[in-house]
Image (cartoon, rainbow, N blue to C red; front, top):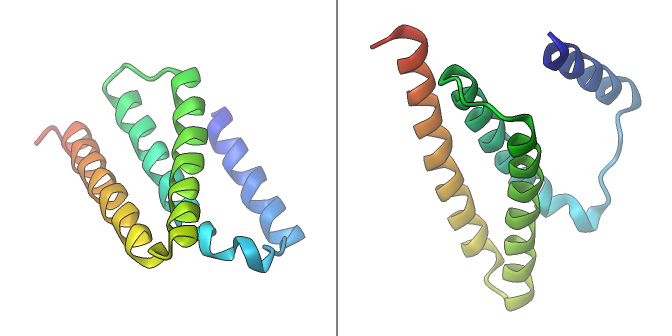
Length: 110
């Protein structure tokens, strides 16, 4: 119940305050969101498998976002930002779809 309350509070704060993202950070926001989604779906899968650990989730969430953002930043610095961004999105996308499939199997026992 606490995660649902946290989600509702977070979405409400985001809608009310409508924070602006500095222009310099805008290229990294989509990558950070995809990395965060990967961590959340991994946590949902772990919860359904009965092996969820909140500490692991927090570390996974923060490290996924940080590593993905740093990779894209370094790619921008090296002049291969778009290729590296695409690579990060593909890898995280594969993980997201794998976790989604596992969650479906766990929910529907198929």
